[in-house]
Every structure is written in C-alpha cells, then in structure tokens.
Amino acid sequence: MFKKRQIGKTSLQVTELGFGAATLGNLYHPMLDSAADESINKAMELGLNQFDTAPYYGFGLSERRVGNALRNYDSKDYVLSTKVGRILEPCAKAEDKYGFCSPMPFEPKYDYSYDGIMRSFEHSIQRLGLSKIDILYMHDIGRATHGDDHERLFKIAMEGGYKAMDELRSQGLVSAIGLGVNEYEVCEQAMDHGYFDCFLLAGRYTLLEQKSLESFLPRCIKENSSIILGGPYNSGILATGVRKKGVVPHYNYEPASESIIKTVARIEDICQEFNVPLASAALQFPLAHPAVVSVIPGLSSASRVETTVAQMQINIPTEFWLALQNAGLLYPDVPVPKGAAE
Image 1 (cartoon, rainbow, N blue to C red):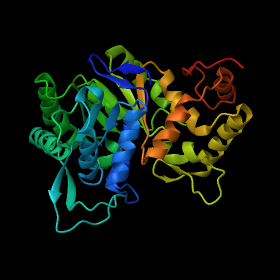
Image 2 (image 1 turned 180 degrees about the vertical axis):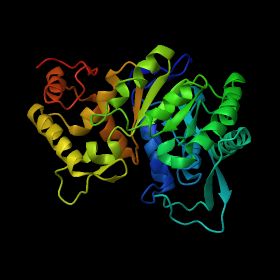
Image 3 (image 1 turned 90 degrees about the horizontal axis):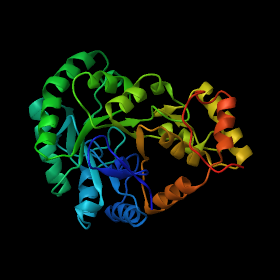
Image 4 (image 1 turned 90 degrees about the vertical axis):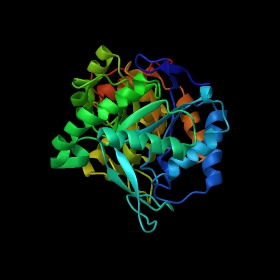
C-alpha cells in the first residue's frame, strides 16, 4: 500500500502515486472500454486512490470511462479530480483532433467565466455519473497555452472563474480547488488572487527541470498549497530514455532537442552505474520535496499500472542522487529521496 499525504488545509489524503486518465480519452490511439475498466480496477487493487480526468480528454470520453469504473467503489475509497475552463459543444461528427482518437462528437471551447465554470462542473457531474468531485482544477490557463490572449483570459478567470470555484468549495460541492497547468508561473500569478488548495503541475519539477524551486515551491510551503506532479516523464523522455532504437524521444510534447538528449544521456549513465531504472528515478524524485504530495503519470492499461507501481517501489540509494548533484544535473540544494546507503 502507498503512503497517503494531505492536500493543503483539506481533509483529503491522496496516495503518493495517482492515476492520470488522459489516456482513457483515447490519447494518440484508441482503447477498449473494457481496457479502461481493467486499468482502473488494477489501480484500486494495488492501492492507488487518486484519479484525475478532464472534459478535454477525449471530449468527455475519459470522464465517462472513469465514472463508469469508479461507480463500482465506495466514494470514500478514492479521490477524484476533474477540470473546468472548457465547455464541450456538439459538432457534426467525431474526428481525431488534439491527439485524441475519440468517438465523441464534441468540440472544446475555452470558457473561464463564472457561468462557464458552473456549467462545466454540472456537465462533468453528468458525464461522470458520480455524486461527487473531490478536486476541481482550472485547466490550461496561462501564457504557454493562450499567448497574447493570456492577460484577457486570466482576468476573466480570476474575477469570474475563481469566484465560481470558491463558491463550489465553500458550499461543500468540491473539497479542493486548484489549477491544472503546464507552467508554474501562472500558479504564482493566481496565488495573488485567492487561495488554491493544490496545483496539478505538469512537468515543471522533474529530473530535467527544477527552476520552480526558486520561488514557487517555497511559496506553496508558506501558503500550505500542495503540488500534484503530473508529467513526471516530461512527455516521455524520462521513461524511454534516449538510447532505444526506433524511439524518438519526446520532451514537452515535441521531439527532444539535442541539448536535452545529451542531458538525459548523462542521467542514464549514472542510472546505469547505480543500476537504477530511469523511470523509477523520474517518479520518485519529485516526492522528496515537502510541497509535492503525489505524482500522477498517465496510465493506459492494467499492465502499465503494475509496471509503474513496481517502479515506485524500487529502492534507490542516496548515493545515486548525490551523484546526480555532483554531476551538476540537479540543483545543488534540491531535496532528494532518502534511500538506503550502499
């Protein structure tokens, strides 16, 4: 069984390993409903209690599949999160787009307004077919997604969207609110406008990236806001490495640059020296920081769940992390997991 950690000031406790359900929206390739059920059932069997989905994932497909599987369990046995910030509008036909091979005939439209957040929440309850959502994240707000339109949308989000989310929290309809984003800077910006229990931060505190240590993570500690770390593999390169023939390493949703490939190759050299799987190091590293309560990689099958659980349980010696620091591959003052001495 995995240890559980508390989210912010709430009573919610999540396992250190969670289930990212973007894959259940047919991300990059279709999967059967039965395979989705099997993957969630295996996660519950092996002690995971945190499941994250979103309307965007397969345009409602991931939410439907997550709800169908979790409906068989007592709601006290899991923590469910979904997201707001997009409304799904009917379109003429389903087609593959945004990486999802989904049969759902909907088109996602951004809406961070008060009414948009309330509609999105109500729609998610219906798609999930469940009586509760524990954590509600505002999805993909930020300059990385919206470019020059960020300031306009951020103003709408903080004046309208945050008000709606805060009301849902104060009414007990959700237990926690946060942002689900790919950039830590917008999290800091949002913290100036209200209290967020947690942030689902994808890929910005990993073996390859620790800049968020400079201001954001210390502020989370100070304000008692928790981090759930999504994308611990930085879009795959920290799972596959860079030496597998026929595999194009991806970093931040794109083919990796030469400099990133060289950095990962150096990390892999140290992994080989200490007989540590790269994926295990990527999963376990973020949890050493006191602000991080969980990592949630995408889990696409029951076998992937089993493999990931095994990777989380591999003991990594302290000397491995020190070797990474001595090689200049980690920030010198970064917290590292405490493993058994060699």
